[in-house]
Length: 323
Image 1: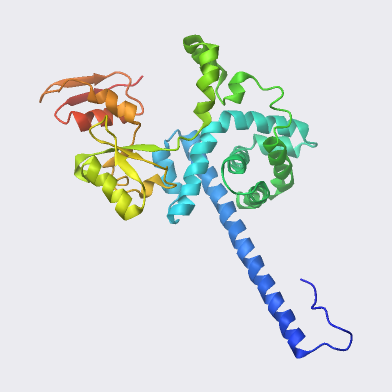
Image 2: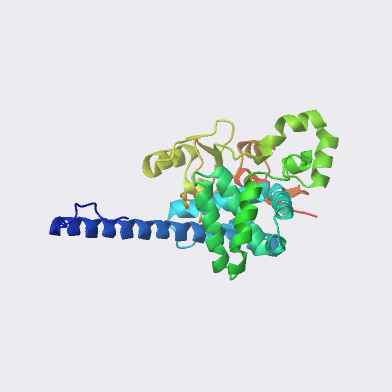
């Protein structure tokens, strides 16, 4: 903020007051900017901690996300949920892009940063936010460099800025990436899909694997009300447009994905859970199971179909097996 322009010798109390007012406004703007930057950095760090919990401890999103968003308002928690789930969806590709960007960078610190697991996840999370959230790339990169200090790795601020910018631009990656890397799939899984579906069919729908569906389906237990009642509760009480799924007994379709699924009624108490309508429809086609009869599920992980089966067949004795 420069000084107020005045004619020589005409400096007045009014000009002095204007200058003080401008300075105060500038300080307020800086404080707001720094507060937002700190929140963005905290969002990235919380996302990194959740990703570490999932990858290193082999835990699920249901366990990691509530920990990561504890104490935050729904919108801030939703950003973390989006970042963690989206980074996992793209992680295989992001890791290859980070490797290519580090190879293109000068110096050993870039490789040291990429090989450090928390920093690698920080950069991957930053890539997701650059490409799939409204935040500007400039703000995300700055938040990532600030996050280095919070991780106790202030030495990595300069290489991380360089690597993330190059990786976001795809330098050294897209021109040489194979089909599996472009789809963010491990080579073994890509080969299996090609073997079973054919390369042409996989090329047709493979990119959809990286897209976040625009709608969300829920399975609603009877204790949370009927699908019609639950949909009305969401529409009227939470402002979330919803309707019952016609082809399932317990399904509800949300017309837009909420940023924080955990804040929906019944999710925390596990009376409501996320499940695609097609999976709900499948278990609903089973013949009625009487009391004392058993259902054997030999491919049970992660348990969503088993849970849906018990909604449809509450009298059944379920034996769930996973190799």
